[in-house]
Length: 576
Image (cartoon, rainbow, N blue to C red; front, top):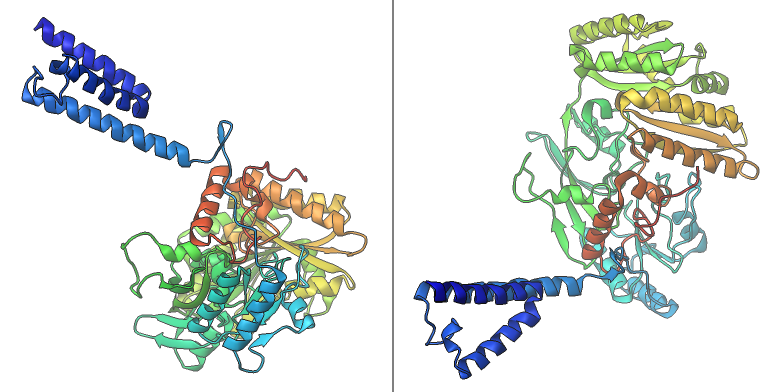
């Protein structure tokens, strides 16, 4: 027994040394074992025929050594493949080397050869400038080098393969309604893929309440087509007029209906057809309403802003279109309006609210002075409600709303009893942007959005209005108050007040994030909001996003410069 214990301790000591330096020690162990066997100590080696332990002990010791070697080798390989700087990992860096001018010219010629139809390929200077910037965006921009207008998924594959061959950046383009520089050109030269011509509705499955279309289709046109065919269904996501399905996927959009139907990140996109950076085509899932097969690759592309692939088709989930009526309530301040909304949404009738919109006193003043309405309204913070359901449901919901807003000291409540009254009343909400511009002639409008938990919205609006007043910047505010999302429309003189407007936007974003909110509720990140992602999401989350981007698009040709911070491990912007 004593001899067995001694042998075991000797072996244990060697294994301990092996665990400290597995690869080198394991090699030394084999060398020592060989010498031991040749020097008369073979009875201690589990590989020797003279080993004095039992067969099971011999097998156990061999297994321990082999396991240690495998563990040590794996650890060594993992450590050797990690890029380390000091004690910290170097952040994931996206490729930024692209084709030369000669390669860009060759790519354009190859595109002309592949697309011979008139206007399919354009290098007209004015068009390149228009497609590479926006009048509604104030972020750095560059004109594209060429515009290509595909008609099918196969056409997009051709474009991507040519771009990949010459390492030329690609930027998807369709509705051009983005406010954060999503479709701006790249400084070294870029291919603009204009998908606006891919606007066909491929099929409508009425029985399944879904529809498949190309990504250039506009959401309004889809709903008009359904209505014209007498189909009592609609697609409920309603961002700005002119927005297309591809852009709505890319930015993870929502709109006024979000309080009832959610955003693009809900289940409204059943599947997507996507051309990947390597030229391959994928369909993210089948048409079933739900699936537990693998992780949700559809969601991977929602909010990716064209940086992981180009969406060419989508299957949309439709929902029954219900009758609606409109009501309006006015308050002394935003705090009372928001607390009323919270109580309304918690009530049994809350599910019948399709939209709840907030227009602040400045916006109501702008609507009055713009001359776009027949009768002016009191200049107060105002809520607009869209109630859905049959006549009985609408009446009951309207009564509950009236009781609750009265409890929260509403100054005025108006219910539209007829369809025409409802349309007229809601039209005032739709005039918000036009009214703001008309009320301040000669000024530019910087529109930005943030979103916070609904209970924090009064604080955010109050602090923002105070900041804008201190900065002497004209402004109006409109918000999807039911989900805490609001838009600040800052009216400014481009020559004299640009820096002041830019500073106000930065402070607004930091303020929203500090309230456990987000830098953007629905506009997306693009160029304008990427500097805030580390502050909002954290370094590790941003690094994960960049790792996914690098894995799918190693050449970084898909809409480079957008969405991902330039260096995720840099401290967030200090502009306050």
